[in-house]
Length: 193
Image 1: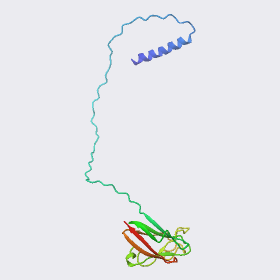
Image 2: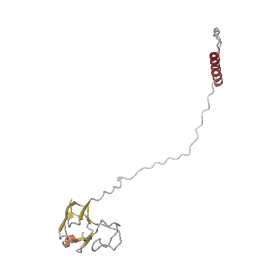
Image 3: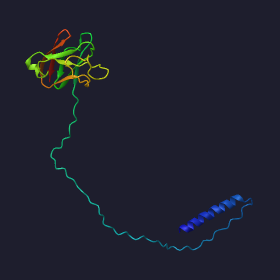
Image 4: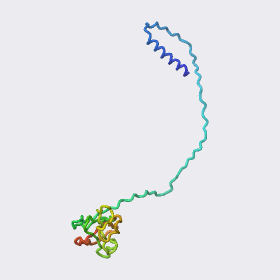
């Protein structure tokens, strides 16, 4: 059947080419005579495929956990920075009001004088590591390392800069004093819920 269509298509194209290329007038058209065409068409049906069993394994997992909770993403710790300047000032102030869990960072941008903080009483000494002064590191060291002018009580020379930071995790008021080259100021960290 396909061969007949291909032959007819080729003949049609050939006739059109020949008819278009000749310069003679068209010949009279013959009247077609009907011919008998059989009405029975023979078709072949492909055989029905026989199903073949597969070797696929299906695994069903049932979650038997009653309450599934996602692992919480840690929230960033809020920070508050208190800075000792080279103009003998403390910015924004030696007193701060922060929420529970805030990390308070003391830093010095004074290359000329060392600065420190110290607990004012035994009750607040637990947050300040005792009653001894704590050196406030100089943050503008060009190498990022502790140098000779970094302040009193610093880590050994050449160790990396580490800020003086304390996380206040309980509501309350924590008094401290500044020194030694600031006019000694009373500072206070007020922690609220």
